[in-house]
Amino acid sequence: MTSAISLPLHKQTFSLQHDRFCDLLATTENLLIIQDLDGVCMGLVKDPLHRAIDPAYVKATAAFEGHFYVLTNGEHIGRRGVNGIVERAFGNDTEQVREQRRYLPGLAAGGVQWQDRDGVTDHPGVTDAELAFLKTVPHRIRRSLETFAANHDLGLDAATLERCIQSSALDNVASPTANLNTFHGEIGSDREIYVALQKAMQSLMDDLLTEAAEQGLAASFFVHYAPNHGRDESGKEIVWLSQASESGTTDFQFMLRGAIKEAGVLALLNRYYAQRTGTYPLGPDFSVRTAPHDHNALIQLVEDHFDPAHMPLMVGVGDTVTSKVTHVNGEVIAQRGGSDRNFLHLIQAIGRSFSVGNVVVYVDSSGGELRNRKPLNVVNNDGTPTVTEGPGDVLDQSDPLVLNVVFPGGYQQYCATFCAAAQNQKR
Image 1 (tube, helix red, strand yellow):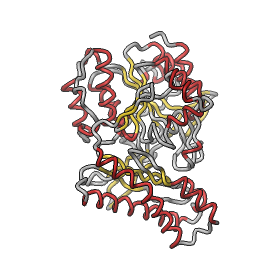
Image 2: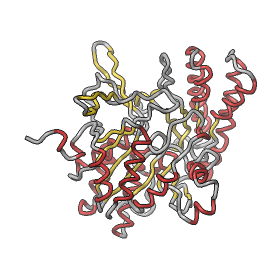
Image 3: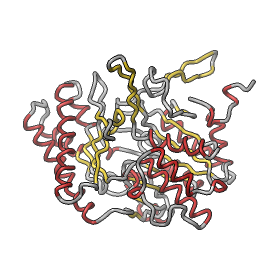
Image 4: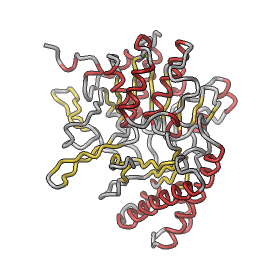
């Protein structure tokens, strides 16, 4: 009888066999790594301007040239973009970073911002009118925060309030965001006021969607809440209002419709096939703006257009997966969310559909500055660590997403394994 620990990684749950995962990355020839950034390869912090990345990790990604892409709701460019973080890791020597091709390739802003290793960016399928509307959003966020502070007694001095506002109004090019992490650090103990602030940001996002529709952009945008409690019956994400010491939803992101990570998986897979076969299965102009949003429709698109003979072993890496079980009229309802859930689930489903051992990897980011992640529960059985509980609700026994390999030690543990795989890679 085969023991659970000797099963292939893609058939395991909460595996801590990092040595086998390292070997998988180092020796698989037809490999496609799709990885989130915040919380995965750098720590989560209240102020995005304080993020830092290990230059050793950045260098290691080069060993997977053509096999490694990022997929993030953050952005490559701008004052808070990942490019600036990479440049700071190398002493702000922008020329060196560009010459040595250190920029992280892949999709940002949920999939609408493409970048190669040279730092050349593009926004496939995005119009000038949409970018112009997005440019107005950071000011609206700032003004809304100022109005909220004027109408509520936050107990903050002028300097602290200004710091909170500066940290919260993120002027991203393609995904302007209200990030409330700094506010939660200052006023989170007063749950009533903090929840009122969450609701004020939600109301602002609704107003922006209405104004966009009035300008003929009704089909252009949607709002992403991170973390969230899944989607309602209409498909809209459900805000996670703060409870006790948990911050709940902290990021209110005004995003381009189609900018969902699961669609980004197909865009990256399309590019991967092109570089290996010379042909884009979905065409050279395919982007997340033209992709379906439904999970089953995305799988069908892959089955209809991608040659199984060239299908890579895909590794999806993320840190934001949630679930919450509630009881309504005697019925058990599981609200499943998290900004990485759907893209990881799609990678898992593609692997099963094509009989490829795709691996879903979860990095525990609960040890950072933020307190909106549930930690993995690790116990020692005769000196052997075992994960007994994942990031979701323990009562959620039917979650379709299986986390094959987990890193309880957070981004540091994951990055160490990734770097080891880069040094040992035999591709």
